[in-house]
Image 1 (cartoon, rainbow, N blue to C red):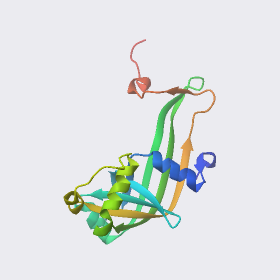
Image 2 (cartoon, one colour):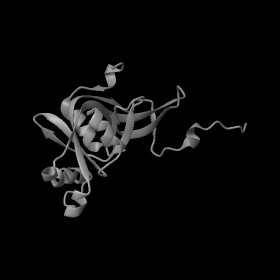
Image 3 (cartoon, helix red, strand yellow):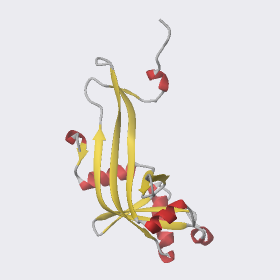
Image 4 (tube, rainbow, N blue to C red):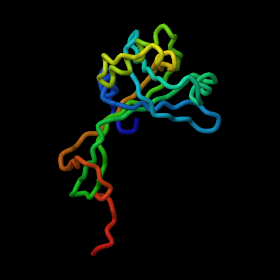
Length: 176
């Protein structure tokens, strides 16, 4: 990592960042270019490793790619805020992110309900009642994370946080 001052090295801190994220971008190996898809997710710890859970329809491109090569990478990020340095006339963003890799496995039917509940628990809906027919019509898979890195950028002295993003902050004005 080029910016070691922004690196998150503590495993538990990376897990906490992941808990704050609401989308996981999963990258699969396609023939010519990576295939990336944003997914809702749930997570748990298993034997000291993070396991991410995902769901979707029973068929589609992602399953074809996983069947050919179950290696995958992921990225998730949160904590976005526009920051301005009025003195230097620069802008940037605050963020926290985790990038990792691992192997994808199908979740057996007997474990689907538990996995779906982990996904809903991530979005604070632990008690959501899934009808059995919904689980039967849903494919559930998991990524056992084999490695990950974290990164964070905060607000530094002299910077000003802009709470609401608006492209007008960066527009070139033709008015004199």
